[in-house]
Length: 97
Image (tube, rainbow, N blue to C red; front, side, top):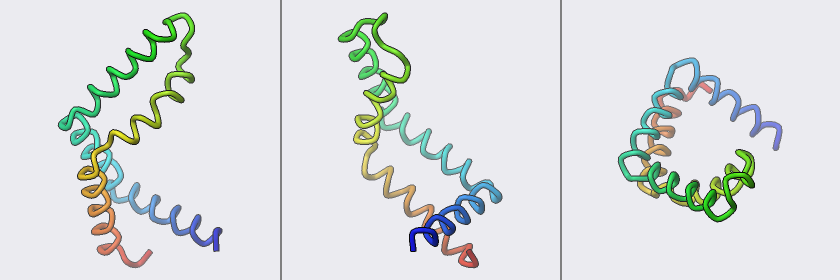
């Protein structure tokens, strides 16, 4: 069962790439996140983390590990829903997967 899910996920991803839909979804996400202030919020959080730990004591990996959970949590539900709807529409149009 798990293997079937992996195969299906890979097929969907391949179709998204082939059709250019993946890039369109990424651009939509980027625009929506900027529009809602997500980028600015995350940038401010990065500055806080660096200020707390000190520039000399923070690596890029540390920073990524620290901000990733907050970054995911800050994505508005409306943005998640819109992306999910776009993906569902794409899958319905390409039901031959």
